[in-house]
Image 1 (cartoon, one colour):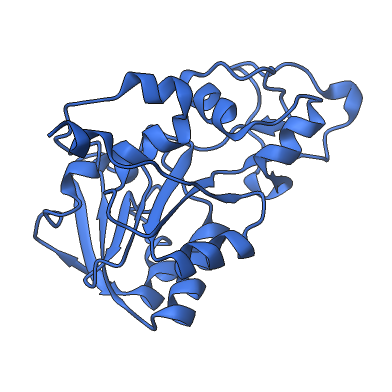
Image 2 (cartoon, rainbow, N blue to C red):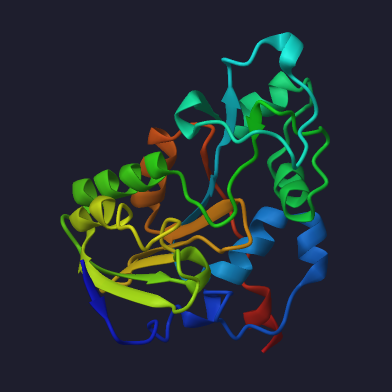
Amino acid sequence: MELIEKDIEDWIKPYATIVGEQKEYDLELRKQNPADFFLELTIPNSFEGYAIALHSYWINYNIPKNKITESENSDEDLPEEEFSRVNWKDFYQLKQIDFDLNSAILNSVEWKRPFKQMNNELFPGEGLLDEEHLNSLVETINKIYGNQEIELFYTFLSTKNWQKDLMFSGRINDLPNLIKKENLRLTPSLIYPKARNWVVNTDYDLAFTTIGGEKKFIAELVRKNEYEIYQIERRKNVLQQRV
């Protein structure tokens, strides 16, 4: 991957919400269908299909039950390798709470989850797409489109020095190695191909990633990531209707 000096492509820049320019929001849609609302903010309504990838919960099963307490800021940081990924549906089941995708999404945004965080748990990372989902994305694109030419955007908040937005250009097969660079703190904030036939947006403030693309692309991602990536049926663009 090559570090380049350029701006985000015009067709997607307004949806990169950290630097985007969208100013009109449908707050009623936010209440009725949060999944669709956040797609509205982060993905152009010009694709055949859409999906949301939920960033995983994490549980450390090595902590004895009698040592599990409500999490506090003073808790000792435990090694990441001791934690196991848990999808949202299974995590809710562990908490004995019914899982509804839209309610869970809104709860994650508003930090009103219907359960307390325990000291053996890590909640989904905001702005941090699961590496497993990223690898699945690379595999799926290679299978359907080949080794596409792509561009990546990192908001400065996703870098370790927190000083400058970064843009990279390269091929999709180069992506897994890029995220291992020492100066990059999170996964890419925005990924799109020069062909413009899909896009992946990981907003810094969200615990999930939004995806748009052809139906076959979305269907394959969902198939390979059951209960982790959800297909979303999207209504006609409300902002377009108002014009």
